[in-house]
Image (cartoon, rainbow, N blue to C red):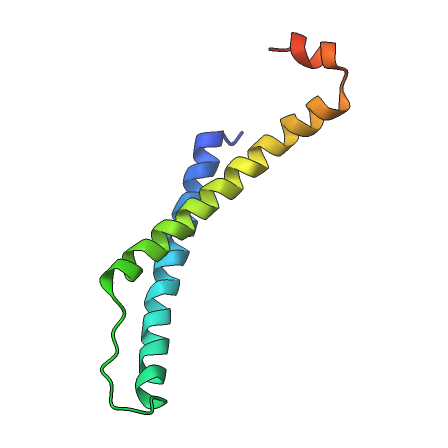
Length: 90
């Protein structure tokens, strides 16, 4: 049986790895395009705060999705059952 903490850990690690890899590949992919297609000679760089906050934001969004999915089952059960039954199960 998979516990909630284990599922959150597995999904969180996957989300973090994907966000870090996506940010790194995005930086490698977009910087040459900016330099190549610019009208003027510019030196382009991605600020460090973007490289840090993008994976953090993606992990936060993954956490919200996990929380919403975990709350969906009990919410549907409470919505379809009688009020007295739902209140007595606490």
